[in-house]
Image (cartoon, rainbow, N blue to C red; front, side, top):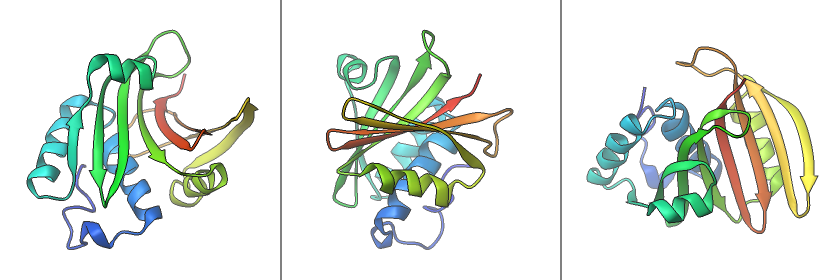
Length: 167
């Protein structure tokens, strides 16, 4: 399921911003079924093929970036930096999750990416808490049994797109 776009003849540096964000989210979070046992070999393979670079984050850093996250990586892809975090949230709705942090992205831009590229997910809710704008989508993705959620949260120049199992 992994490497769908990167295994083709498409050159990674030819992707536009929409394709980059949606490809990283699809390949890493959805394609891995939010499992570190799939994500780590995938990242190693992509690094070996010189399509991206990554570094594993320290546990303390991961917990600071995303409460409830158990692991995380900084990705350098097409001259941009992205952060992937994943784990299990026991204290909140959703449980298992995988998040992609995108720098310098606006709320409506990220929301429209989800609406356009993930059409099996439908907008459920939008709220604003302080400077953060949050939207939640519900839907289905290949390889998963049951309903999933995608949430986006944008504030202070950083957008987070999260995939989680819906309760």
